[in-house]
Image 1 (cartoon, helix red, strand yellow):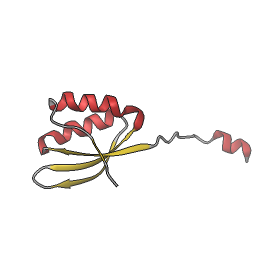
Image 2 (tube, rainbow, N blue to C red):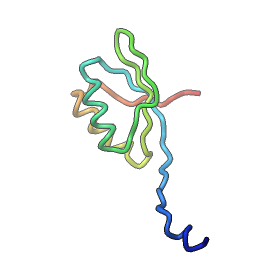
Image 3 (cartoon, rainbow, N blue to C red):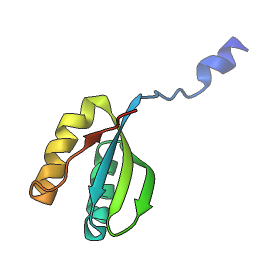
Length: 84
């Protein structure tokens, strides 16, 4: 049994930090692509006049993701901390 346990593939779990982000519909595909590059994901979305996203990212990638997000949006988008 111990040998079988050693042969099992292990998967490292990285804790994610959640933020909100509000964007236009035309920016959504770019944001999804950026999240994919940084092991992030969309936790929830609310589609109204604009799109409000709740996104999760590994904490180690937040600063670089934020910089890339600002570059992508020409400074119009930023991650907002979730106040609970």
